[in-house]
Amino acid sequence: MLRKTSLGNVLLVVGGILTIVGFVAYFQDNATLNLAGFFYGIPVLLGGLALRAAELEPTQYSQETTPEVAALRDQQATPTQNQVRSDVTRYRYGQAAHLDEVLERLGLSPTDEERPELVAVREESIDGAYALVLEFDSPFIALAKWLEKQTKIETFFGPNIRAEITEPSENKVELALIAIATPEPAETTA
View (cartoon, rainbow, N blue to C red):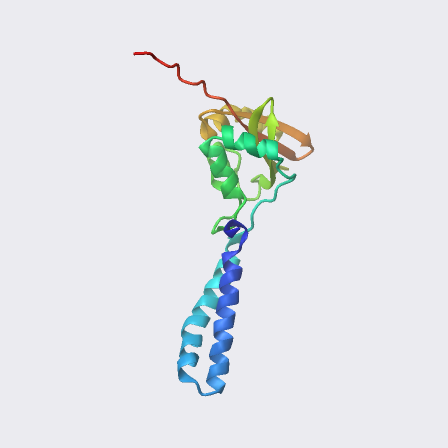
């Protein structure tokens, strides 16, 4: 729930209420509430405005996760998959775009204008394995460039990750991060 709540909006509401209380108290000659309203309300209000200006909204799911896939996530998802899913589906502050640093490190973001934009995510089962699918709008980076970086993507998001890159339509690229089942260690008898 808190991941889906904008901290900037919360501070705007709280700061706005405190500031209004301060103004009302000022006109009613209530010095204590007046000071509290102004000394806390205005800075909180300004903080809320600053956060709203630097806010990056969560990426939406393109389709709802089924209970079967959620159970598969609980069994197979790697810590990296869980971290990526958590990061892109919550409010972020001070970033230009979701996964901007990742795309830059992978060589898929030559400039801010050419950077692919993460437009949606979804979770699904691919050949019985949990997959986190990142859906990008990529008008400036061709599929060939993405495929060229496939090994680097697997290394970056790995271990135990296999990457599948597809182009469902023109200028759209889907990056599926698929969990690779790790073999159970053999039991030894002593």
